Image (cartoon, rainbow, N blue to C red; front, top):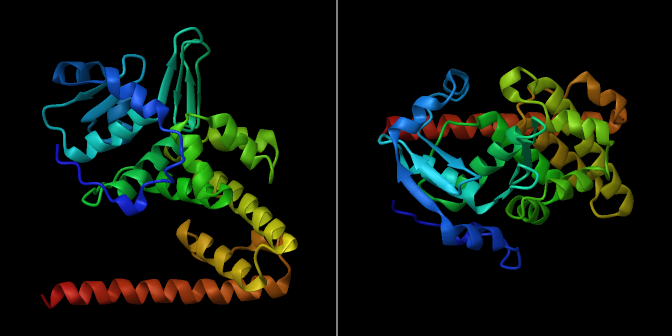
Length: 274
């Protein structure tokens, strides 16, 4: 596998990468199509054809004969951020946890989205259509808690750290519901509602503390709404924002949407003229 890395997007050198270094010492990479026959039909229906996966408990990446380098890079990041606890029979994978003993799976959707987001940042030639919605959701969480914190929690398999950061802006039960929700289960609306409320709360705190000004507040929320796929600044925001701010956000949102549409049209026209 040719592995070009974008050094400009590598996280802060101070971030602890001990999990990566430790797992690399014993990592096994193998091709074995027979193992894919044991995957449940549900996995294929939800994700499409599975061509690679990382077995946390065995610290091995298993590849299908038809695998693409994109699948390998994705599983490589899972390896770099995963710990198996034999005593608890629990997998700590990035910003998710799965207890095989207690049948608990929390944060999986978010973790897959962030892994995909990091693949796009680190590997310049990476392209995938997987986990598109999950990727946008992970970006939103990163906007809320900060990129350095997100890197730290991911590469240290520290879901608790992520939860503690979110507790600054919301309650534990809301966080638990968010982390156990899945785009695949048609829970996208409730996920976005949670993110919207938490992000507005975070920016309101920043505004009150003088960390940002009103213009920053408006621009950040407008772009946040656009990135999460909102077609308009909906009525829900009336409960969270005053009318003056809401009007400014609507105007800025429309500017962003029109600008993005113009850029997309220009790109299409340029391709047609080549």
